[in-house]
Image 1 (spheres, one colour):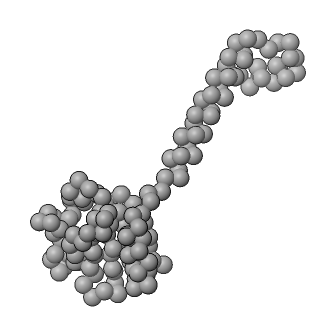
Image 2 (cartoon, helix red, strand yellow; image 1 turned 180 degrees about the vertical axis):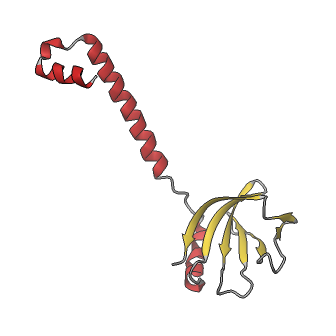
Amino acid sequence: MLSYIINSIRHPYLITYNYYKMLRLLITVCSILLIFTNTSCNKEVELPTCIEDRLETFKTEACSGDELTRWRFNGRDVYCFAYGECDANSRAEIFETDCTFMCTLFDVATGNTRCESTTWTGNAKLRETVYRHP
């Protein structure tokens, strides 16, 4: 195809109707791919206002490695504010998208890994890390 294009540039009279159809199809396909790749790479989930407010407070209290993550749990999105090594219990506070407090999870060694009478591990699916404290 490349040699056909080069020959067409050198000898414009060799350009045929089929070449224009092929070029038009190529431009259409490239345009569609460009649109889909740009929109899929820039997906950012907008945080609910109350979660943003809690995040600002979390940033002032957090230690290195603490993070805010979004999970899918019991059929709905929830946010997990995980306090790591600076907290003696390595606790994680779980909130719904409307900032309704759901539960507090503790390190496996401590034993509380249930939220709403459901074991967190195996029933919660990580969606994204929203914030990680440096």
